[in-house]
Length: 348
Image 1: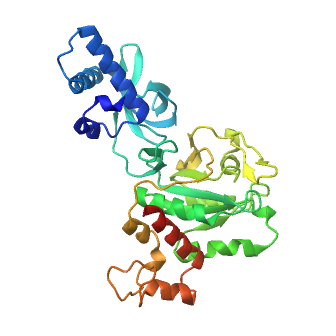
Image 2: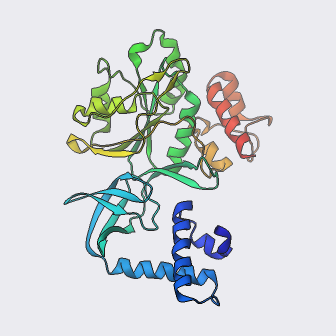
Image 3: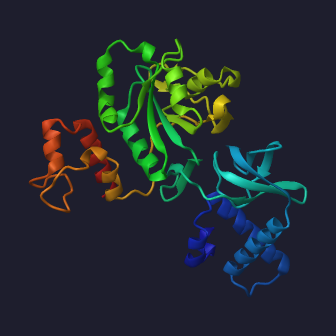
C-alpha cells in the first residue's frame, strides 16, 4: 500500500503509524474514485485528502484543550475541563499523556491538534523495528518497577529502560516491589551500581505498605508512568497509592515465573496533591528505538571522567582504556559493562 506514494511524500508522512497511513490512502482512493480522474498522480490525491481534513479541522466548533487518558485503535479518551470525552484520532499518532485540542466536526468529536511533547518514552514496534512505538508522553518521571522472587529481578531490562528514558527526557527511578518475599539481601546487590550513579532506588511492599509513603513523597506533584515486566505489581502499587481506583491485579504464572497481563491498555489517573500516575501493560522485553553508539555511551554516567589513551576509544580492547581499568578495579560494575558491550553489539 505504501508503494503507491513517492519517497518524498512518504518522508513527509513519517509521523503516521501504519494504520493511520493506510486510512489516509483509503480516503485518497475514495476521492479519486468519486472524481473519475485518473490523470493526476496518487500523491496529489493524498495531498487533497489531507487538505480536506485540514479545512474540516479549521471549521471545528466547541474546541477544548485536554490530556489523553486512554488510547485505542481509532479513538482516544481526553480529559477536559468539562469532563472526559471520546474523540476520533484523525491522522494523529497519540498516546496517554499527549496534550491535545479536540473539537466538533459535524456530529463527531475529533482531535484538531497536538502540542509538542516535552518528554516521551518509546521503543521499536514489535512487528516492524523500523516503526517507533510510543508508550507515553509528557511524563516527569518513569518508575521502573522490578520485583524479587516472583518474577525475579532483571537488571538488564533496567539498563534498557534507562537509555530510553534518558533519550526521551524524563527522570528515571527504580522501585523494588514485593520486598516482603525477599529472604536474602544479597539479591539486591545488583542494584548498587544504580544508586552509585544517582538513581533513586525505593524498596516497597504492597502487602505491608513498606516504602509506599516514601515513594508517594518522592513522586508528589509529578506525572509519572509505571513500567516493567508483567507480574511485578505495577497496578498493585497504584492501588496502594489510591485504593479507590481498584485496578485489576493478577498473579504470576506457576512454573514460568512470568506475570499474567492484567493491564491491557495504558491509563492515566489523577491522585490527590497533584500527582498523576499512568499504568501501562507489562512487557516481556524492551527494545531500543533509534540509538547511536555515542548515545549508548552517554547512558553510562559511570564512564564520565575516566581517561582513555585514545579520543575515539570504544572501551572494548584498546590499551590505556580508562573504562576497562575501572571495570578491572571494580570501580565500574562488571554487569553494567557487560550490558554496555551487549548493546554496542546489537547496533553493529
